[in-house]
Image 1 (cartoon, one colour):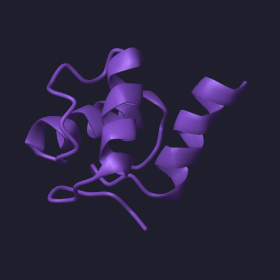
Image 2 (image 1 turned 90 degrees about the horizontal axis):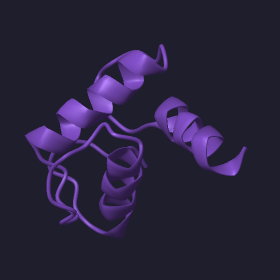
Image 3 (image 1 turned 30 degrees about the horizontal axis):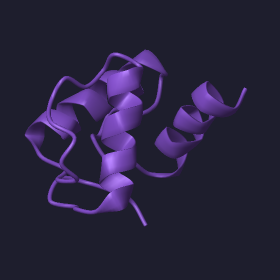
Image 4 (image 1 turned 45 degrees about the vertical axis):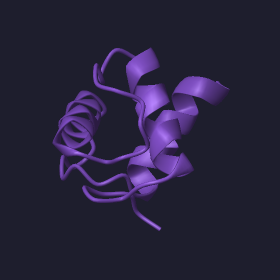
Length: 70
């Protein structure tokens, strides 16, 4: 299930933590996918040549996995 603005929960916390670790997110780790989280996702997507829609779908998740599992 894609994560997008308005999503909440542990999956959002994980995305925020990962993006913060990678230097894309500077907001609070609060589990709320807000405008700051969306902006960080867009920066990450552009950096990884993923269509920058601000939604954490399959391609964005796969790119994050590559950073942490390779």
